[in-house]
Image (cartoon, rainbow, N blue to C red; front, side):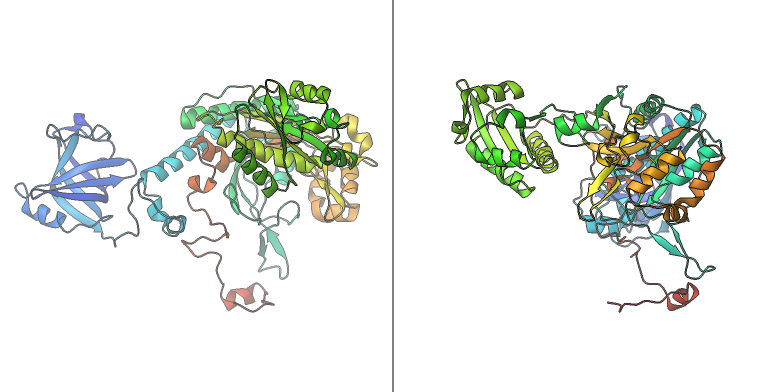
Length: 586
């Protein structure tokens, strides 16, 4: 080894020992002719001292060192003088008096300081990611990620799971997001796809009798990006045979408890709260509810249906709903007007409101509601004096969406979000199908292999919108961590589901024939989940942006500024792949 110790492990117990350290020059300070250097590696910082009275050659070399030079220092450990210790560092009680100094690699002046306190633009951080990753905070993020991955592997191995890799070059089975495709050189005109998830393969592993499978899998989706999305992400992928939904929940809750404890020393309470999809939508307006604060929604359609307020009456007559939220605490008129603009900015036509007083409800619309109706409203929402009831009247989907956003905005403004609190929940019993207005057809809410509730199978042919399924989502603080389900194993039910979404037998065989063939040879009941590993680690560390826990992420245009991908390829490569452009290069 080129070193005897790392820069984070020398303590007072090492005083008097000869050591060899190697690392990067974090900073250099000249105090009265004596040069003090903070030497940094992945493990920490050690102060080394180059004193001309001890060795003039070493001192002369040290005076020429720049930031981020890679050096090796030989010397003896000694205690720091009184008043010069640094209790913030594990090595802050000692220093190394240098006997010999070597420059292993010089460095140009970096475009930003390798310091957690430095303000650096996202563009620079991504372009010089190798420098960004030298910062202690980024190293910490990757260490937590490593511990989380190891905790998952340890947990599953202890339960008898097998970690099995599935292919990265697969058959394209378009569903959900667009596939990334890879042209085949040896099969001209044909393409592989990069996997959006291992879904079909992990089900085939259950047919193969593997019983308990897991994988920390790479998944690739060609979709528009945002802070919690990347073209390639990592998923904790799990599938189990001969299990009920409760068995799966118990397994995944134990996984979360283990990961948070071993990676971040946090104790997560289990079991997690469960909400049906219907309950979540009614109370919170979303299937990803943040349960760290109450602030629920109330459907008051029936209560206000006979009021004289024309806005509400027309919406209800048109099949819409009236729903409200009632934050505690008094809001000024300016604050209310600002919240009205907020709702309009998210698709609402407006926001009606009434202030709650000791005498009842007051506002410019209160006169349109009878005394009896006003009392029913107060009772329905449990309104307290000096609070405000805010109403959205619209189609159910839009009313829920606007009120979900309003609920989150109120939580931010009223400081209802507690720090360092993690509220998990399961959202269950999703609709199997959702209606695509643009294409005027039914499509899967999650995917087409999700088992319908047995009592809803009869609705498949004539009333698809009534069919609930075994899908479940794991939600943390209003963020979906993953989705799973009990899978369809009955060919007749699978065929009926495909018919609803317009996939006939010929197309089904073309797209999923290998899975359907496997199911002909005895398939066990099975279910599983795919959990967003990047999101889990990011939320554990308090981030909404998963790029903070990915070593080499991409920007919002799906580009990597560091390696300039995606990039052009040579004409020779295009010819080998039997491809040519049908567009002009910019």
